[in-house]
Length: 211
Image (cartoon, rainbow, N blue to C red; front, side, top):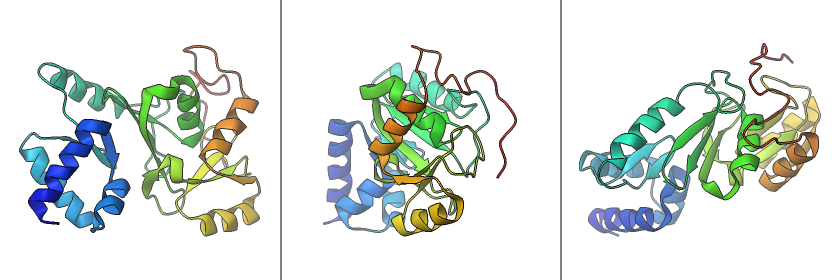
């Protein structure tokens, strides 16, 4: 596929789906991440799309563009659930159907937000706890309730590879699961109160846990 055809196809997908992760684009086109980064850079300079953490989103029309940029900039602040400042090692990002992006300090709060927002979420990216690599939360391998508690309790950690998650679980306990298991794990552990978020951590900003 020629570069011009690839960029055209990319814009068509974004127009239809709203957002795409970098991993999805690499898989669909069968090209390198560097190639996708070049395409996104060119299209962003042409104001044809909006780059977000780990992917891209379609541009809204008119005045909505300025509002969305403000929302995304604001989202780079504290966690939307517990108000802790996020770190790169645990970052969980959420892109809503309207293009708005928000961040959670860790997968625990990210999954809490998934429970609260439901179908409002178009895409979620989470960080591999060991490598620091962002990847789609829906494709992640989770370790649930391990003794490693770098942020909110109960601990939820994400990994991009099954083998790595299995080795970590053998050393630090917890249970293995996928995205749906993490949703059910947190649903059982806590009670969501409308807009109040997770009762374990919302609004308290307690000191970070330790291993």
